[in-house]
Length: 456
Image (cartoon, rainbow, N blue to C red):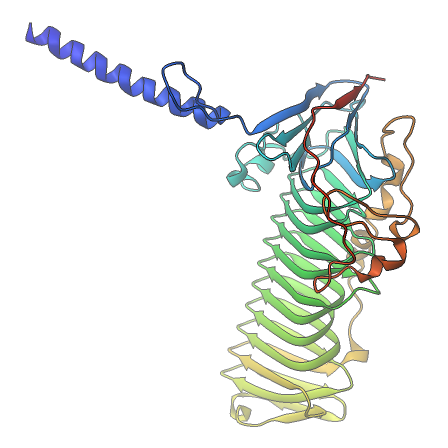
């Protein structure tokens, strides 16, 4: 009898544990707990607009509602994103050369967030924490030949978040105040229109190839684990408040950067820079840097471990204060020539003028200080990256009979998803300090009025 009771007790305990696990699994996988015996009910957050695998031919979708926050998940194919004069979000897939999974979901709680996924069918973006670590390894073979075009209305969006694994992603003239991009092993090209200044642009690169051009943003934060990165500011870009680049390994080239504060943190990688800055901070590990300063109006702080930094100063120059443990500092600029070692740590050298303070801390590496006019050319292998975004227009998939490429933003009116309507004559006034003349309007609720264009 005791054995029977013991077995029954064990069975009850096991069933109770399994029930608890099933409920947790149901909630984690669906966001909902709707069992008849439970008084707790959680609404499903994600509402499906469309979710389809395209195995051949072409397929179009149209989304009629507006969303201020856009999330893009792409991998394993070629995706082209830009804005157009239409009042719908138009998505078109061409699976003639490979299968593709395309979906669109919106946030069922507040209707402000739209997530569009375009990827090879075998790729999952569900585990965001593993993105760039696991998911992009699963699609190591890159682009399968499928092409997806996504056209957004010519609006100013609040947030653009991109998660890109492998394959190719090209984003042109997208207007979002806050931009956050994660790139795994693929190719990514991004360009802003020079008439619009975003608040934030953040990019994290694991091992791919990235080109960011025509950038005009108040805060720019770039992080590169390895790979190759090219970033250039627009010729008429307003001065950024802060520009930071953290380079672990790989190579990076930054051009036309103009910032109040510029921070470069280099591990074992290599950087080429052409920069205008009020304040410059360089932390160099074992890598190397070629940093040309078209302007330096306040201070520069150069801290080098075992690496190498060559600094090309403007004619205004500055006063150099070396602090050398071992290694050497070489100065050949504006009639000053000197080779400094640890015994020169208490000295200072005026190169050009005394208006700018240039502090050099050196453990065992080398620092060279030269004239800006003697700066080296950017490596030729970055030429391809600088023109990367402009080379893909021929690959656009037709998004319907009413499709027309959008003209430059300054030629018309920027319509509003949530906040801003800007006449073209005042486009250039968009900035962090003043978000341009604004007309506040309500965010439209998601009505479920979506149309799907039949396969062609």
